[in-house]
Length: 363
Length: 277
Image (cartoon, rainbow over all chains, first blue to last red; front, side):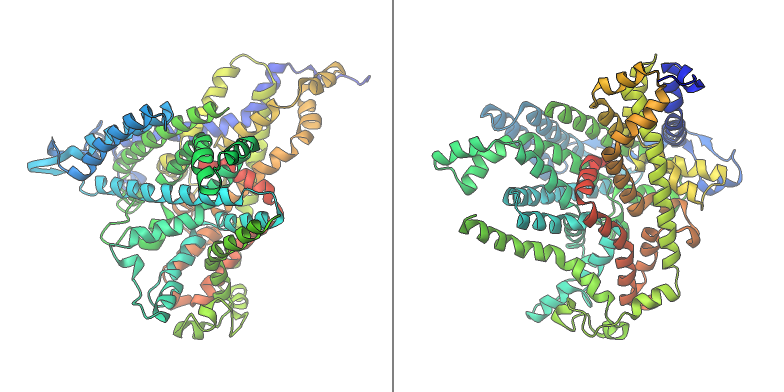
């Protein structure tokens, strides 16, 4: 081709690269990298949203005081303060060692279980001693609620998605249609999901109450009963977010060769037996990946708690992101809210790194 | 296909139907008169069949109230964000995947580290920044933060890396410049990946709740997701249950239609998006 040379042609590879990168790098720097560091900087200040809005000098540098005010207290001691959780941690440590020895867990999963168990032994041990108290009485219970939510939603989603995927793992029209039905709720927004379930759970108008009454039962006041509120938002969440997990499992199942199942069938391993002895071991990496993804996803829970229960009753469904939002935008304490946001980032960042490692291992 | 297969399909249809019940219920309630709903929500088949039937809720929604306006806001924000993310992600993804330049590896790593930062960790500083600029309650305030999330760059980079080198080299031998290769050779090839990214972004934009909640405080700038949340809390008294449910249906319509038409891409997008959705 003999065309006159244009300036674009004379542009070197380096120039072209920077030109193409510039739009992204500018937005990335301005709206992600800079805010990230600025968030840390805000967390080192006594920073009132309204006061600083009127007078930019109204903030005061306090170092790590906000972190102390959020996470620590007066006369904090360590001991076996909550035998249940700490005992569970000890059991978890033993289980990880045992399961690793009988080779039912990969090394990676064994380490993960051991670390989680160790944290369970150590963290609940902190408690205020005599005359002591937490500076922020709501922070750790909020973290606890978030963990409880994750602890219920993740197994709920994972187990039901795994069973469904195993059952739906056939390339036929009927199975495709069923998959579509199970996936559909996944595309709805959090406000639609909470709208639906708020009314589903309503003791006066709700579908669940209507059915209970028809069979002569007394309707439960799901969203305002301390015993059921967390269960209610977990149910709504499982309904909402089963789809992705199911699809990831289906993808993982495609990678298991048919020969293994045929060999297993010769050994009389069919149905549930084949699922336990063939599917599960071969799917271990996918399961780990799905669990880590779900932990990251559900640790950020906000809408379900904010819209369905408003964190109540009696703070039983108060979760971390909602507490950050309230501390920042209702109480105007941006410094403390930012300290909590940094805490959130550290936890989520850890899981992102785990996700990255697992994802790499998979390839 | 043997008998056990048909049994399996029948057995699975029951949970699948139960899974659909909440959605059916929302649609059914939206077609029932408000004065009936105020008395009971289970007139016919626990309210799952809209008898008595009315379309008044939808008519009322479009006659007054802000739902159509919020719907329009959501469209503007979602389309704007999708185009913006596509533009910055395809260019940066191409540069990082196919061009050689000093500083490429550090830049790639810096971009990937950004994947670890969740929206919830930066929404407070973003809020103060946008407040300093006086940008809140505007479309660009709702659009810009998402353009900085590197998931799109990551996606496009992976796609461009998989394209064989010789396609590019042939064009280079003909003396075509890098930008033209990007525009005329690479972009047409990248259509499927761009489609996935576009759907991922659109779904995210349409359904996003936290950032619009802090940034858009004036009702004129509410997205439909945010607007629906704002009428949820006092649904029974002011608006009537049927009308709120109709808003819910309207708010879901675009994403459900998108899902039914582009199911393969949507599933792919949501799987890739995963945690970073």
